[in-house]
Length: 340
Length: 255
Image (cartoon, rainbow over all chains, first blue to last red; front, top):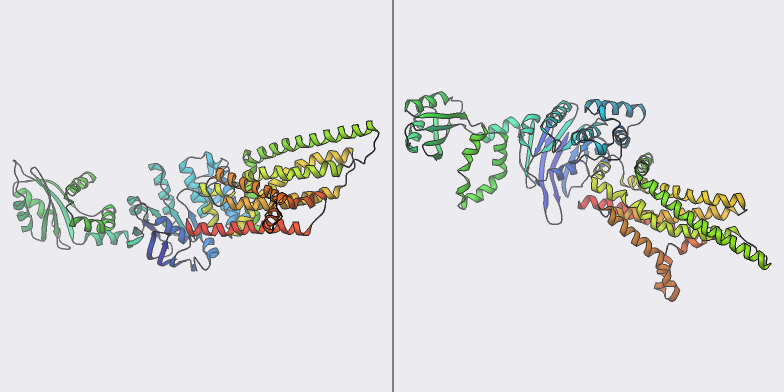
């Protein structure tokens, strides 16, 4: 449905999007992920024919964005970061205007307006001025205008930004319910959103494509060998990390144990095991039998957040490791602890 | 064509649902009413003086009231046109709705012409106020209607040209005030350019004076459709809209 090949956008001095290539199949929801300023909006604007690419091609629903922009625009519904609403218009008036712009007319138009009002739960604000609507309603009106002409492709730029948690859930459910009929690209910098709504992720950073894969594959890929986080505490005072490490590595199936941090008498280990071996039970027994306390034991399935950080920061940290920037490192296990 | 009309209707809706249109119409009506009242008062006083002196100069409504008043309208228009055009694109750029228009299956030119047409229609509504005043002349006097119609045609052409320039300037900024002020400056300059012709007869001066939008209105005011002046205004309209189209295009490449 969407084919992007070496798409590039250069501004006077900066390269906003640098040779991005990806494909999206029909009916998929794809999360477009990246930190602020990564080039998400620019890429989306190129897909919607708002900006022409500097180089490369983008093909939407079989039409090239440069060659046949009108055909592409007919098949795309776009919700920019701020919903493009006219504050002086009433909801239905606005939806009719957008519908007409997208080539709808007559009874068809009326039907679609009623349909999207129902679908996006804005039927109760039909006659209100858009300028007086709350942020949540505006966002939904924005979504309604994007789907009014039943487009093949929906492009949503941060559809949940600035909403309260309840509204975020409602919007996510709405977007999920739209998949199937429409191919959806949705940009966000909120990671759980991608895990919850999307089947596929495209991660970009500083204009470059970092990874594109399904959510599950990405998690598996970033994890590599299976690993377990273990926190061990000594019963009476001191605990020697090397001793613990030695003991842990003796457990069958464990390939290595890495001491992450030691705080007083507590030590944190990341234990890697061979693929397919379940070592958690043996690990727990080993620790307890040695007379230590087992404070925590959990599989280190990386959340998308960690994958994201790992992927987007790998360049930065590679440089940082050469220089002594150790102070910030010990913080990491603590952060993970509070998360779980 | 359908798309032009969709955009045009939306713009008119925006003008008339907000106080903008009503404020402009009221102010214009008041100002022109005052001009009209003064012109009539002078006309009446002159007429009575002539009667007292026993002279019987022919008094002519067309020459003494309609023609100078149409000239006045063309100048008052210079002040109102920036207020009509300043929001056309600046507002869309500020609120981000330009993204909706630019990603809809509709050509840039259709957007531009639609907006320009809406501005021209609003200006025509203002001219209706003047027609209301002139109607009194037809009730109590017997002026010739043909020069008046041609005068209106001239006003519309002149306004069309200035509105096209205003539309272009509105695409250059997100700020309505800047768009309005710049348009006003350009309008004013295009008006006073004719002064150069008063003291200088070199070629450059004649070209400058020729560019003045006011001088080209004189023939229309007299009730004459001058081919040269008509072409001048139409050229300006095309030029303005052409620059608007280029500016919108560069907006895409730059933003």
